[in-house]
Image (cartoon, rainbow, N blue to C red; front, top):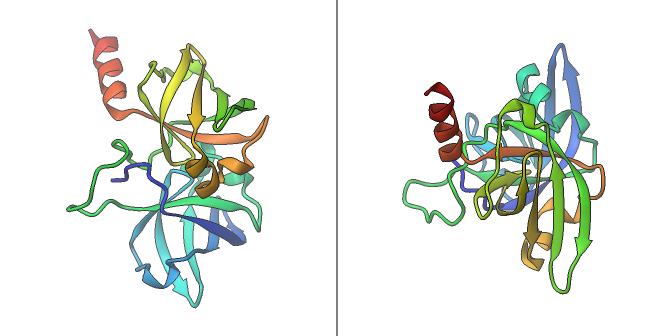
Length: 195
């Protein structure tokens, strides 16, 4: 389980397609602390560390993951938001995040405000996912609060710290991002649909 509090930025060093899979090689400030079989969220996508070698580690994304996320758009040299799993005795600073991306969205507005940034994202509402005003949303692995929620879009406000310490500074108009909707909201929506 994750909380949506980004620990560091990783750099994509190499991408190796193999059949329907994509092997992703990255470097990050804590590469030497990673262990094989450890879960590590990349832009909110929970992936398993399968290899470590010097300053690089390797994770593999399968077709199911590639079909639902923005990992197919990764390029060598790009930075990704990283979060290791929350320790059992850790603080719960964000919200419940599983690392299971529901769908992608596209940035339709990026507006610099006086000391913060407003980003608006549009997504395919036919998949049944919803946001609510002041509810939680995970965008590229970052736990955020929803503003301006409508049927197929929402906005988030980004503080300077988040802007500087995540890859939000690289998000612009037409950038595709990963979305994980609030798990509690998903269960409630499912129960209401079945009644």
